[in-house]
Length: 277
Image (cartoon, rainbow, N blue to C red; front, side, top):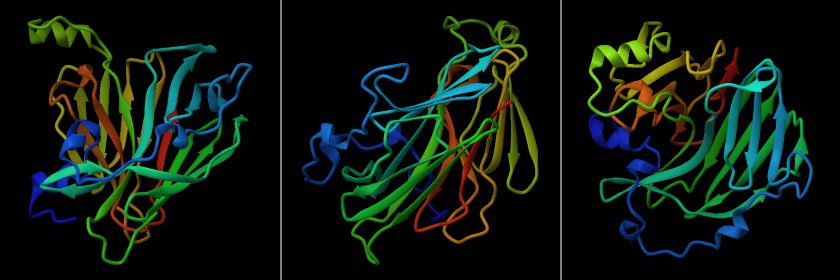
């Protein structure tokens, strides 16, 4: 990635809010959305889901539109809001990051309760092939992606898989900062950078998008549960440590922040590890 153009380089890592509108994309015809749905249960506790994994500290639900929703639990009951993990493929067009259209799914999971491993593979436009693997255990969820494209593609792609978070508090506009700090007391985000440096951010503080983050630990909004997101520096080629984005460009409590991984070519050893402690 060309870090000499920081605004463009970072837009490559963006999610939907930073992508070009459909009218601004090159001419193309996407397949009907219903051909790209995962199979789901038609009855029972997992009705409408592709997979349901229940652990002591969380429930994980994979939906037909390939979104993984994770709900922390305490004493068997949900605490706080769920967060979601999505994957997408983007490229740069007219100085903007554009989401590639998914044109086919090649491998999809059979509807499953308590899965240990799941795989989704397929192809985006311009013959960009991808694979996303999920591993579930009582201790963690591990998500790993890989991508292959033509040797000289018209538009260079990046594949990303990202955990994104909703607002933790509803606070009226104009509330003084000392009051916001009081209302969000006990809610903290701890960042560990790839080089080993650490930083703590209160939920009342402004959060800026940051690269080369190896882990994010968040506590407060989920009762006694703590969420740890890890993206260790990869040993293989084609990957990097994690990135943190803040689309609201505001304090943490407003949500719309995300943490995940991105690769610009075929890569190995680039997992996103999620633990709910």
